[in-house]
Length: 249
Image (tube, rainbow, N blue to C red; front, top):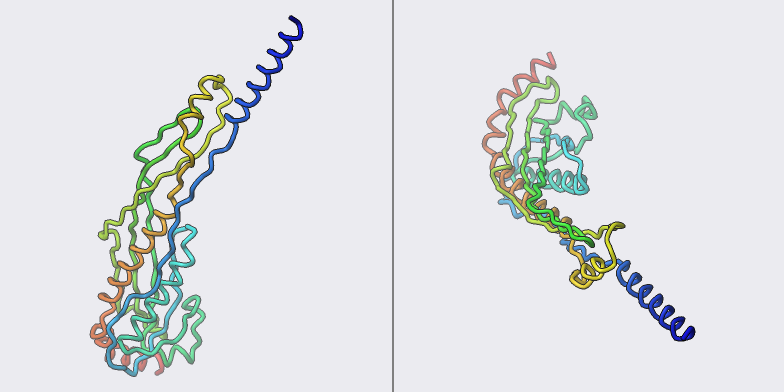
């Protein structure tokens, strides 16, 4: 009898060990991603002018992983738009103060962009069981770009436009599932949770962010192309020449 009881005890201990081991295993996470697409859309090419536009690198008021890529992409887009509209470019300068006096004399106007990207996360659902949590929500993309045109010698502002980008209504849903370590759960509850758990957890936050950034960028470029109007930029010519003349004398 003692041998039989000992075998039962060992069998039970092994079984419990196996069950506990299976319950403690980690559920793999599937991270859903997509590529950034920050290529400048086609812009209509217009006749060349003799005017030089100085470009200052954009400043921005957001801190995200995509900040640097979006900043560089919008800077490139602004340059390509102005080139297509017939202007020669000088720069980009890191700041306005980096423009030398000799460059200021040659430059028609200096363009200074400011980028404000506003990303809001709204959690619509957050459910947890004894094994993992599932958060579902939406990312809302908005913001604006302010474009300022300055005569570099006198710093006189000839144009300042705030281009609203929130009216694009860019919204991307996301799912974020993550495993939790609940030390208070009993063995039966643990087994049930494990049996009903998905084969993998989903994290689509990067995908939602990248897709939103892609759409935000395309919308921003289309608006910049519209508001950086060639005729309007050239309409300041007489006034620019006048203030430059006054500065020299």
